[in-house]
Length: 75
Picture 1 (cartoon, one colour):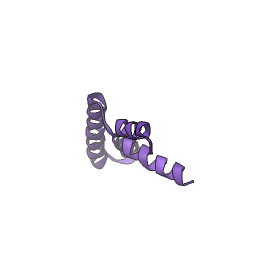
Picture 2: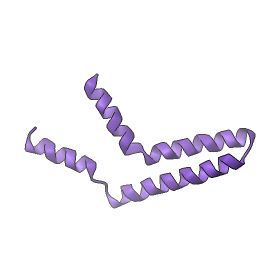
Picture 3: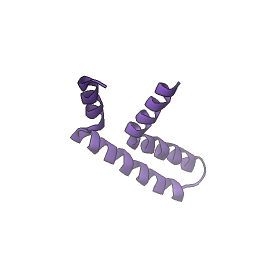
């Protein structure tokens, strides 16, 4: 690896303050929605679970991108 590629990989692992805050917001919203979904019934519960999973995916977006990158490199 060259020095430039090392710097690129370092910059991908550093999170800005804004990215950290949005990750915490996604995680908090996901937990709140999951709690509400656990208490709801029927179609409302399904919708709340769907949004809770989507918020959880938003909180894990950097890890998901890393895994997708690994699969793209191996394919």
